[in-house]
Length: 368
Image (cartoon, rainbow, N blue to C red; front, side, top):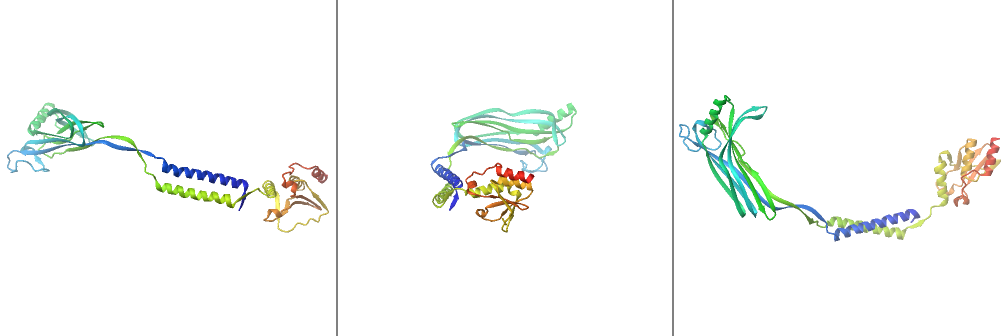
């Protein structure tokens, strides 16, 4: 198969480069170990804190039981005290030095509700359990349990005293919470966390229900970024090998079954002529009669174009799909025939782009 020499050379170079690239790609995929960043947990632990409660009743005509059933509304006049059980639990699969502190507090607060938000009018904090430290060396677990009794009537009495003294009679509540600060020191590093479960008891009301965030659970962890090897992507490798084989076949085919040839000078010349002057040419399907009284051959296509402009006639030629059969271009003016012959001297690239002396003489005679 014949190909233009330059086109064939370009195809060979591009195909060769693609072969080298695909070969390098699949060899690199197999031989070079790639790594990616991955976050791993080197230390983990779990913190859990909760508050549970039991409402203890005074002897009364309504309830036979001593402890009110969970979820039931409590009648203030029947309540003796509220038993609070606060607990904290630490668990980890790894050993660490555990330390920290905890305290149990109660905030008695008077507030008003404005536009779906609570505004504190006054607040008083009571210490139910002073801050207590804890510490445990090289352990995987730690448990803390603390019970506190809340004599509800005492806090209701306190609210009444403040209301009488201040003249403010607004909603009040008591928020009981356990503040826990924990720290774990391991070989992997230090991690800290704070938990604060709480419960809310309405005050200075005839009946109430206990609400709040009674349980909190938070993980403690230490993470670091490491580089791990990426497994070989064999799908990509096989695809690259297949592409490499196809490119090699294409390269061999071009080398063996194609031959580079120079562009036909005649066709190259005609292509240039049509590109530059095709808009002023007329193709005829019939043969052109050359039996004119006066026949003049010009030296170049530029000469013929100049004559065409002077006599205001188009350049005509016998149309053929095979450019090798297009031999002459003509300009017809009255009894005169001007033509340019696609000869060997033009094919050799010696076409004169200027106006020959003979053509100048012809143009002068036309103008006279």
